[in-house]
Length: 155
Image (cartoon, rainbow, N blue to C red):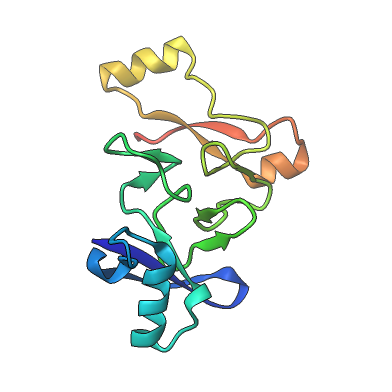
């Protein structure tokens, strides 16, 4: 089965449809995205160029079955189609976060989540605490060298 995202205003994904791969075959019997787009236009009354193929097996620019990833992430309703980078982006989680086109993920402006300090990790391993880092946009806006805040989620 092939999957196509219907793109609307502001490049927003409005719908994702599944279609039979036979509807994508060109005259040589080879799958061709443009053939699928034309089929979708005829059957859904939406311009062919506003249908973009997506792969259900692609997430974070990795293909879960070892194949070639397609367009960064599997499109979902509300995602944004980035034509320049050929990536479907989920909603931006925080105002300060930036696109990482290599991983097709949003990332904090100060880097990845820090590793837990050894004492907190030991407490998590023992099951007595639930330490983890969470992003604080307020902390980042106050001091752009901070943002990851250590919290204990177990009372």
